Length: 113
Image (tube, rainbow, N blue to C red; front, side, top):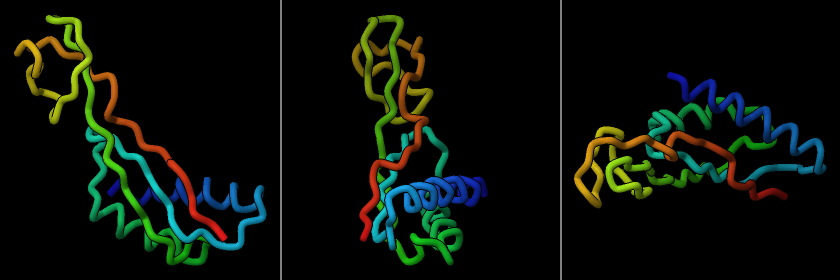
């Protein structure tokens, strides 16, 4: 379950920012997660609750925003949105696609007090 280690990294970032900005508590964490990032949302929610115990983000709401997968089609030379890495181009039906977005994950923002 790599979601646990992802949450440990998120906790480190949250705690560093809380110290730097004199934050007492984090109420909401919004994550942007690409479609191809390989993150299982139920596992992420579970890991988040476990890892945040004892931190400034204990009890915080985790909001996950899914970002679409995007690829460059080398048949029609367009950047297109795709559901799966192996999908054909929705514009031309071509199969020469190179994913360019969708495997990222980042903290979008924090709601703090």
